[in-house]
Image (tube, rainbow, N blue to C red):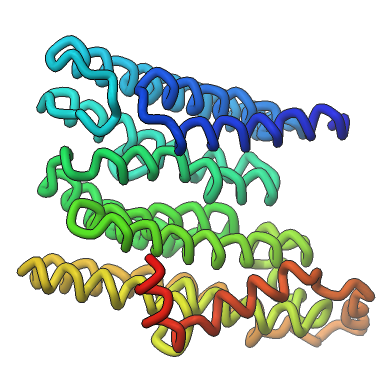
Length: 346
């Protein structure tokens, strides 16, 4: 792709995100979402591979449907209340339609079918954008309207996402699909607490973005697209693989690492809201995700390729991990002791 075109599309992504997260008018927020959609489409289809074109069409159709529902929801709310302000979402039907539209935008269950396929057809960097930056505007709209939404419906969507995201990720062999189902599972954790403590949702999304960015950049550097190629990645970049293993375990939410922090706070908040059964269910469902994170870590660092042939192992690459990857790896694994400071900031 032409560097100037890539610069234009990247700037449009940032512009659309900024417009949506800073607006208080429904039409302006919808415009930002549309700019985002139109900017990411050329980045998905830039390889001109049939799978990339298929992913582009799937993404365009689902996002168009979601944008139409958001516009319909805002129009219905303005018709009944006379308000275009995002915070004045008081019409019950508009709240329901908006929840469904944002669920489609984010890829929450039962509207998740497009997300793994689109990520599988995209490059690693584009998949990173789809998993992190493209989820910020819809999450922001949910945060702004959180007091108007239906808590039982959000709880149902959240538990379904944690269940399906963990269950369907168990038998995947493509790293991008595994990370797609990981994203769906993490979105369940974010959504379940959004009506009770929106700041906790923002903290969870921030830490998820840091950890997912680390994994995607690491996989992009060692050029791994499926589990079978991870078997020989240890001999190429041992240090990066070790850091990626810790980041994967952090994404799983194991206690000594950063990923344990948001899950700990979310379970604590649900217990305060007298939702102990819900907290127990979603904590048990996180074990499904733990299985495929452990499988990724096992393939990347513990399993060695068979040595029955006379071929030499791959040479180690001269490329050292970038500074940004090193910093993100440190943040992804070592922020748990700073939990009191972080929860105070958020």
